[in-house]
Structure formats: structure tokens, C-alpha cells
Image (cartoon, rainbow, N blue to C red; front, side, top):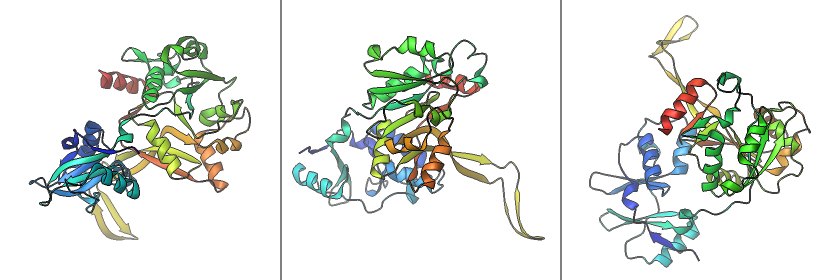
Length: 351
């Protein structure tokens, strides 16, 4: 059985009470242990915050500037320092958790048991589809002689960044849809040998949309598969999005980002002629499509061969037939490179 071990990096998970959700996200990124331990000034455990807790808070409409206090689990499972690794592993297995704080009799955090399997990357047989056929008209003149996914960021095409990021997560089988200047993509990547992966291509005779190109697959996948737009740069873990999809028994999962719009004026709330209240420059929060999806093989049954279809339409068709469609709330860095300003921002971030 895989054992739980005390992580040498456990101190990186500690976060003072009153810190923001954004600081908690930064803490998660730095430790890589998928948990934040919120502590008092005396280093006593106040509560724990998992990656899933943060995503649920985002779905509830929490701003990333809000304190973690509202989102933490104030009664996490903890173990004393003297408990053996074998017993800790049994507790973690029984409770289906991957981290357990070690707390002494005074309530001080003195360690963190981590399930070893979360620290290793497994290879996924699940394929990953990358939509790379768009004309990139908003990025002209950059795309007059170069397909948008081949525009360089940090000396590499965006498409190469996506493949390399997915490879780190254990994905090895890729399918890339081609249309506009597709031969340049195929000539650059070939069958994927140079990158240590396998690449196949779908060739669109005319633009089929973000979902329609999937109808060209000669064989349906037998496992859930990732789909991503070829112009989306992100640090999201594709394997975690896949695991989230499988865990929630969904037919289709869409990654979403929180988006804020602030009204530049003071808002007057009325009922008829009566004033009910005022809001000074309120902020409206919503979730936007991040261009990353997970689909079950049966989702392809809602497409017609060679017919145009965008992802939101496919999700509606699935939902109309009682298939479960869910969102995966993202907090990781993300950029949809659709305009010249976005390309400039991508290059600045990478530098």
C-alpha cells in the first residue's frame, strides 16, 4: 500500500488567519501540497483550506481579495505526532483524504502527512484534443502568414507550450485540429516524436467551430478526453480537471474563470418611485468560458459529421438530453490570446 509520509515542505502550507483567498492560492502554488493550513499568531491550527475549498468559494461568488476565514474548514481531521505512518495511511484511506495535519497537544502545527501518490505524475491514456484551426483575424497582421497557435511566446509557439504543459501532467496522446495554414503546424510537430508524444491531426475543409471538428474523429475515444483551444495559455493542471470530471460523474465539464466588472457610477436601487438604497460603484461577478473542457466519449453522439458546432451548443444538447454538464472553477493564471494586446501580455508574463 502507498504510505503517507511527513512532507519536508509542510511549513510552506502555513498561512496567517486573515489572509486573502489570493494569498491562499499563491501558497498552494508554492508548496505544491494542495492544502493550506491557516494558523493563529501562535502557530495554532485554526482551519484548513484545500484546493477544492477555494474552487467552491469562487463558485459561490467570493472575491479573491476576501479573507480565507469564510472558506476554511475549521474542523479538519488531525493526528498527533506519535501516530505511526501506517495508522495515518489507514485514516487517510478511510476518510478519502490526501493530507492530514500533525498537531501537538497544545494545538500547534508540527507537520503534515501527505499521501505519496499526489507527489507523482501518472501517465494518462486519455487523449487531449487541441483546437488549432482558427484564422486569428483579430490578431492580424501577426496571423497573415502564421496560424495563431504558432505565434511565439518565450521563443516557442503557444501550441508547443500547451503540449509541454500537458506532457508534465502525464498526457501523451494528442489530436490537433487544423484548418488555416495547418500545414505549418503539421510540419513543425510532425507525429510528435521530437516532443516525446504521439500526435494525430484532424483536417477541417471549412471551419467547424470549437466542437464540430470533433465529429471528424475516425474512432471515438474510449476514455474521457481533454479539449482545449489552441490559444489558451494557463498553469491549470489538466490531470486535475480530468479527475474532477470523473469524480463528479459528468458527461461534459467546462473550465470557467471568475470575471469582474465594476460599475463606474453609484447605483440607485429603486422600487417604483421610491429609493430603496444605494451601492457605490458595485462589482458584478460572473463566470466565463475558459476554453478548456473534458468530454465523455458519448458526448460525440450529439455531433453530426462535418457540421459546424460550438462548445456551448454541444453542452446545451447534452443537457437537453439529461446529461450532466458541470463547471470546473479555475483560479490558476490564464490568458486567452485573441488580440494583439493579449499576445503582448503573454510575452510580458513569460519574461
